[in-house]
Image (tube, rainbow, N blue to C red; front, side, top):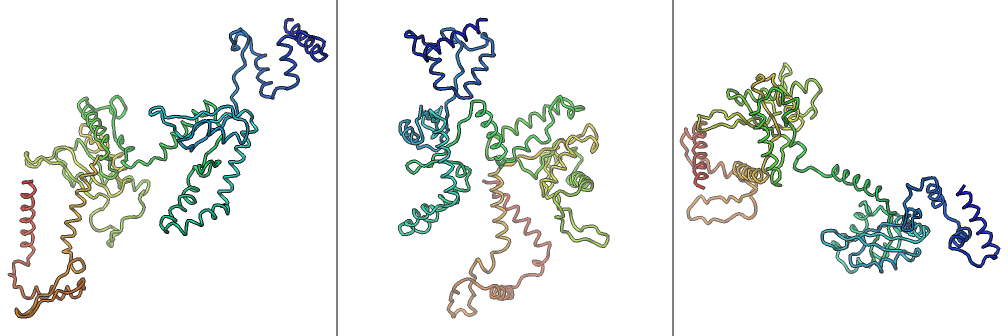
Length: 479
């Protein structure tokens, strides 16, 4: 009944305003007349209908106790790639070309307080926002088509700049810009700057978009140190895999994992994808037995589901179809031994595979497996953590020894011929020696020198190698 009475009173006041008979008009009647002349949009009418449906207790009330209308977000755009020197007034002048601007809000860095190069522009009307986006899309189409204006601007650079700088500038403005993700977004130009423009999102939509972008960044980020395999082979206490293990072994495993985490905080350490670290090896197991166990686990899985690396083994085959030579699946097996205890095994070692897929198969098949050496002698396998600096030093040493073993023969070193007579003058040959000339010179020198017969035997050569190794060990021990 009250609502009906209020509606009747409003109708009567509207009629009085239209006729012009009422001299003393209240604020409510003026507001009603204004609403009739300028009707509300469809969104505002829907909001009013929702407010009318809701009970008065649920509506937000103002200071006067009257229900307050929810704040409507003005038409807003988000601008990126703004010059850091620009202020709000300058940005407002640029965007007022599309329509009246209510406010400009520039974002700053929370830590430093410096401008971040992005901000929001609040328009008064939605038409000005659409005009801004239309111009940005038009500019994007022109850049994709490659307009004649850009070629005309870049033509004078050929006379002023050298070829190297000119080519870099072209790449920077054409190929790299068009291939980047930012170049495929609508933008407008202002004082030589390309301002990327997009419709602003709500608070909830912005949060969802940031979460999605963070997930995509994590997926795209390359794991150069192979940290994803650091947890492979870990057995946590209280899980199904830890059943049958005593507390001492579990504590030792947790201590090893904590040490691994501490190492990986240093960027010089990384997780090897082919080298496995094996713990809790029985003391009576040697390198041959360990190789047999790991090879058997890989071959068993390959026989079931096929080789994931394809047909890579190129060894020759005998009459029975068996491949000759050692299996190259495993490159090295190394047991750590105690020299003070007559080279007895210390219970752990390393197995280096040629391919990562085979190493992963062996790890998952042998780790915590009670069927190999019994339930009390389970081996625990994980990917080894290596030091990048030490490996680079070892590679340099190997390269040096290889170059020495090759003798650096004909092309890298100049070998002059010796004069046959003492009175003859020696002339140094110009340029590098040919391979045939070098071999002739080598034969001549070998003919002149008379060596004993025992120096050509294999036993003498082995003795010389052993002597050189001992000498090198003494030299390195001093330093």
